[in-house]
Image 1 (spheres, helix red, strand yellow):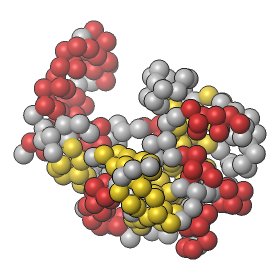
Image 2 (cartoon, helix red, strand yellow; image 1 turned 180 degrees about the vertical axis):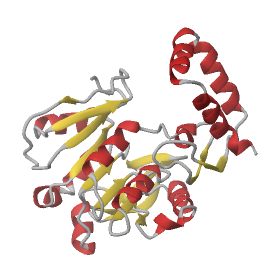
Image 3 (cartoon, one colour; image 1 turned 90 degrees about the vertical axis):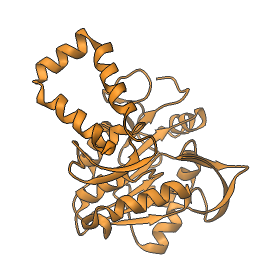
Length: 280
């Protein structure tokens, strides 16, 4: 029963008129935060499956660590990414989710592309890949639209060491051996050409970009890139990629703004999310 706690909390909040909710949050933020903390502290700390209470996956079953990842169940996980998916992805198209984590974004994309579209979820972390598979299976109407590839996306196909820690990780000089693939190679091998690519690979985005030059110049997909380090930030600046920041983890500013000029990579558009130590 504890897996229902986040959903019940959300429904109780929604029963309060919006104006009253905003007033409570403004006048008594600590009280509201404490109520959330107490409710989520009672939720399971390990993996549990629950029904998504709101947001783009409302009514679907999703497995996560409810105590720490309740934003999946509340439907509030990375709303700026959901907005870009809805703007730049359509029925019958292909989407690549590189660094798919638990499969939340992949499932949203699968709903958007419909029966005629495909979503490829790249995830080299074995625990995450198993979680994606579970979440795909829990939503059978979407399962034929999502293809899971337990590979790390880099600049070449082969193998690399992957430093995986719980639900995250990155290609490094230590760790477990994983298969790697370049997106150019994957497109040539499968014939799947994405209309949109999301990159969230813990600092590996520069390697991934090096392996997708052909796809970018010919297919010109939209990109959503989470920038984790200064090297990636410099790469975007140097190549003068036309980027639109769509929110992020620093500063709390979710308003889009231009961050570059015309693209030498000839992509259509990039939504970039800065995090870590990067300055806004």
